[in-house]
Structures are given as C-alpha cells and as structure tokens.
Image (spheres, rainbow, N blue to C red):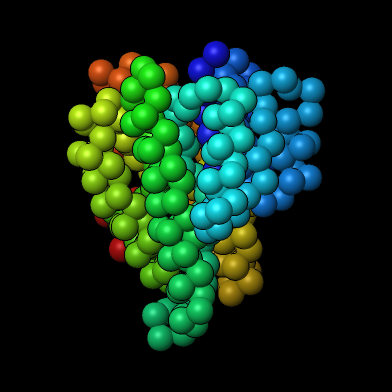
Length: 244
C-alpha cells in the first residue's frame, strides 16, 4: 500500500485530497490541529492515520512523522498543503504581526514538513519519494490586497525548485500545484470579505474542489522517473491570465 502524508487535512483542499487518496487505497496520514475533524474524516477507514500537529511546531511535526513511519515503514508522498491567507489589505494597512503569521505558517511550516519528508525519503530503502507543494496562482500573479499571501507563495516556488534540484541524487521528486478558486472555506471567506465591502460585487468563478484533489492524485501517481514540476488548475473563467 502506497503512503502519503497530507498537512492541513482537516478542511478544504486537504480534506478533499485526503478523501480522494483514501478512496484510491493509499495509507493516508492526516495532519492538522483540529483533531475532531480529522477523526470524522478517518472514521471507518483503516487506511487513515490521525496525526494531530501544528505545522509550525517542529517537535510536534517530528512526532507526527515518527508515528506515521512507525506504522507504515516508509513515506512515498508528502502533500505539503497547510496554509493561511492572512490579512487582506493594502500594504500600509497590514499589521506586521499578521504578515509574520502568514510567513510562519506558509513558509516555515511548509519547510518543516518538507525537511522531515526529505530526510525520511533520503534514508529509506528503496530510497526516494515525492513532495508536492501547494502553491497558488498568487505565486505567479497576485490579486489586490494579498501582499502577505502572495509573498509567501512566491517563496514556495523557490522552495519547490530547490527541493527538486537537491532531491535529484536521492530520487526525491518535487512539484508544485497552483490552485485557483476551488470551492473551499478559504475562498468562501474571501468572497464574504468582498461582499462585505460591496454587496453588489461580482464574485469570481469557482470550481469543485474535487478537481484539485484529482490533480494531486495524478501528480502523486507518477513514477519517480517522471515529474509534474508545476501544474495550474483553476476555474476556467477566472481572470488569471492578464489579471493585475
């Protein structure tokens, strides 16, 4: 049975992806802070392992990885998914604490998970594995009022490239999926903010989150001799191409 760890598995893209991999017969480690949600997701599924941890807590993440490897023996894939949007405002109205929180979760938290996965994949036998980072369309083109999130996701693109390069000698592949407007709690919260400012605002098109989950499954299922380096999956009518 192939194995995958998913961070931010309690909701949104993480939960949808976890369900997809569980249905496909993978052994899935579910990492998030909200244990009640993880337990509900894992209920009745013998191939689900609940791992309560905050991605910014290095000790808790190490314990979660150790528990998972102790039960499975190896790690084939990490879906490095956990992240937050943070304050949505023009730059001079962004609280410094809010900016730092986004960087802590979206960069430091993702590095902690990637570092633990890389170490395991490098030393296991047979050697190798795959890390899939959840980027964003903001990793390429920002939307207004997103300086915290956009800065963090540009950093993830650099992290993805470095992991890919450093992983080559050890058969560790790394790719990035940039997901646009999947119907999740995060996007619905953004829409609520937009409507609060203007009740007549036209909301952006959204796609079913299952499309994102299917894309991650495709990336994870490839042999280590092949890699999806970057994938963009989004609602077709989003104003991504050419947006400012």
